[in-house]
Structures are given as C-alpha cells and as structure tokens.
Image 1 (cartoon, one colour):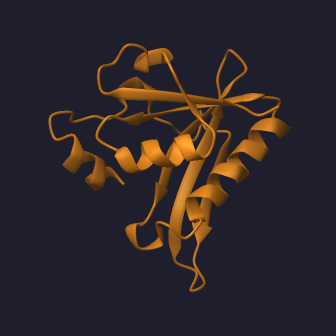
Image 2 (tube, rainbow, N blue to C red):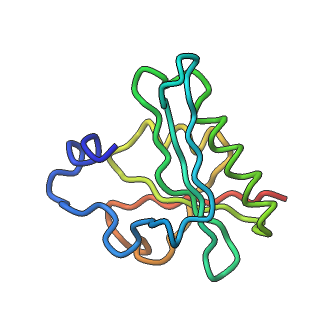
Length: 132
C-alpha cells in the first residue's frame, strides 16, 4: 500500500502525517484472505470525537481487485461502525486515485468538504455515507 501511494504522490513523503492510525487509535482492523490464506485486502475503522467513524487503510492487492473483496471489507467496516454507535462513515482518498473514487461513489459515498487534517487539502477527496 505504501509503495503504491508513494508512486502516485512522490512529492508527499508522509501521506497521513498526524492522522496516521495506530493500535491505540483504531477500533477495528480487518484482513481479507484468499482461498490459499494469503492476505488480499485490509481496512480499519476508528471512531472520531464527533461520533462518526473513519475508514482508514482500505487496500486490496492488485490481483484481487474487481473480485468483491473491497466491497466486503467496506460493508464489514460499516457494520462495525453501526455496532459501535456511529451512523455516518467518512473517509479520505486522493485526487490521483480515480479507481478509489469510482469505488466509493459506486458504494453510495458522497463528496464532502472534508474533515480534520484533510479539510481544504488540495489533494484530498473526502467522502461520507450515512448508514441509517
């Protein structure tokens, strides 16, 4: 994941800065595995102080893209968000990730003005989806 982002955004050495998820700040971390047990995707969720949930670290290996893995991870994260009391999920992707933009829009996410460190960032594309 890091190498792919670095290739798309070589001028930004640290993609997340202070918003980097850690074991202390992530409430859920999922790993999707293929039939051979190999990890093919992942995603994390953390609750934010305003009561929303934020998707972090969504990634699917290139060979598993287009197979439904990403949708499965995203829906599982949304289910966890509801169980944790959040009714809205938000996330950020980048302006050089058209594949991610198409995916999130197809899955019912809509563009927002942004939040936290991503608000107003020229390369950040923020999305949200109300779960109820």
